[in-house]
Image (cartoon, rainbow, N blue to C red; front, top):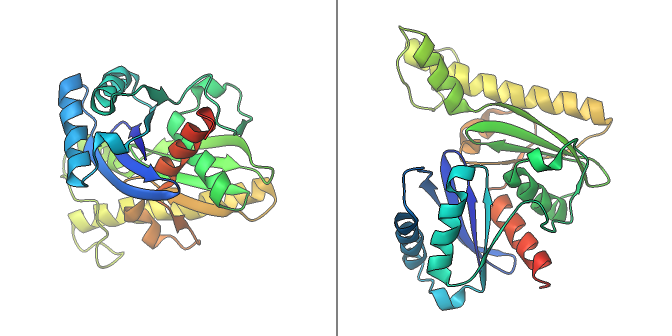
Length: 256
């Protein structure tokens, strides 16, 4: 069993995989103030909830887009499993053909998700990741990572709107019953959800036009559930991409 941890700007995803099976997946808040011991306690508690002992874990792998906490989380994980933890980054074997200008600037989460997507789905691929930012990874028909798009995530857009408009208060990220908002709160909810859904549909159209062919479209990330039900294009939601991708990279780098 492999312990996989993905550190995002908002959440840390922790989970275990056993072969191709995801045993569990949970989300914790990313907190720059937490100590190594505090993270270790969080991870130990998560494992205990699912009845997983340290002896069952053969190794660990970590992907991070928050450098400030990478080392702390790595040490916390090693404190729990008593084994070295592999960190996705320069020098790690991924098997992914990356065609961007500077591969070192490519987020490890995007690499990990693409590795799993290429292994499990027909190319070409578009991979939407709905987190603090919304990213779109483009993989061509030869399974080469050609580039990505980045734009503000739903919560970031909503927070910016409420911070800059004096008469607009905070609302939940939920679609109202009617696309036409009957009050200010519903109007904001409708605007955020449906504008993002329309953006996804439009981005798919434009990227398929640029690639010259139809694509397999995937969605992952903590906020995917807020948007995908309101999109018109066929999109496969796969919340296990990160864990499966890290497991594949772990096995590749350990000759398993």
